[in-house]
Amino acid sequence: MRVRLWALALLVPCRATTRRAGEGPVPHQVQDPSQGVRTELSSAIVRITRDFTGRGPTHSRTVIDREAVFVLLFDSLTRGEQVLVEHGEQEQVLELRRTFQSTMRGSYTAAIERILRREVTSFLSANSVEPDVASEIFLLGRTLPAEADPATAAAGPG
Image (cartoon, rainbow, N blue to C red; front, top):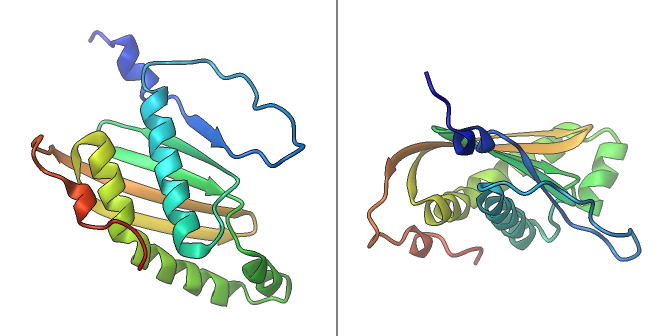
């Protein structure tokens, strides 16, 4: 079986990093054909998370497979959630995060479908507070027709 190099590149993770002032330059990363798509997916999911929760993750990593997209979000808890975790209220924070994920489902799905032009058939989400990481998993279905505009289904909060 012959493997094409561009297909292997789809499995290489991409890390989109948000730098805060004074943290120095973003480390150099090797470019590959799918990096732009992975960066666009990471940026969209980070932006949606920030719009809904008031604070976005400081970095993310996206992996695209033939049948799925995996997005890891790091350091996304709000200051209030961090205080609750410090006081032993992890379950309340995780329940709140499950509610956010349920609320963001439409916007997340619309972004993935718009960028990849593929139907999202299932969305799975999980969170951890120690360490502060979330995983967003999108199972992909058929290719969407060019005239379909999934972005109109969920434009954001409010």
